[in-house]
Length: 111
Ligand code: AMP
Ligand code: ZN
Picture 1 (cartoon, rainbow, N blue to C red):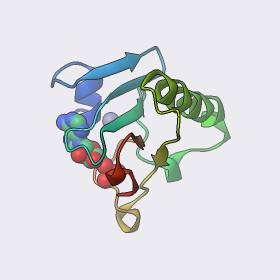
Picture 2: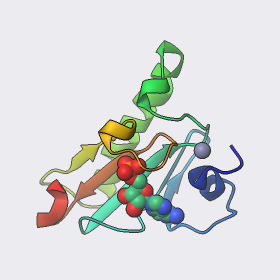
Picture 3: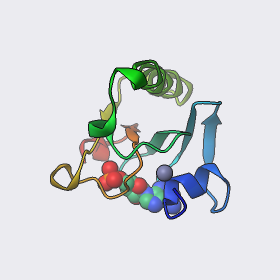
Picture 4: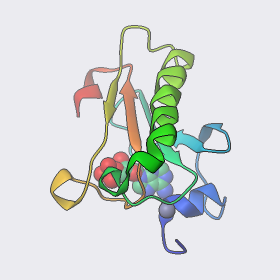
C-alpha cells in the first residue's frame, strides 16, 4: 500500500523509533505516547484491520500477541500492561494498517 503510513515505516521511507523487528512484525514507539511505554506492534504485511483477518492470519496474529508479551517483559512491565486494538471507524481506528497498542508503565495507560 503506497499511501499507508505504517507500510512506509516498514519500508523505512519515514522514520520511527523501532524497538524490535523480525520477518513478520515491526514494533515501534507511538508518536503520541499515552503512557510511559506506548508501542505499536504491526505486521510487515499490509492488513487493513482485525476485521480483515481470517484463519489464514491465525499464526501471524498469535505471533503479534506473543511479541506484545515478550516486548512488555523486555520493557520491564512486570506489574502488567494494556493491549488495545482499535478496529474500523466506529472502533476509533485512525491508521488503516492493523496494529496492537502496548501501553504500560504509567497512570495514563488506560487511555
Ligand atoms: P489508532 O487510533 O488505533 O489507529 O492509532 C493509531 C496510532 O498511530 C496513534 O496512537 C498515533 O499516535 C500513531 N501514529 C500515527 N502516525 C505515527 C507515526 N508516524 N509514528 C508513530 N506512531 C504514529
Ligand atoms: Zn500498510
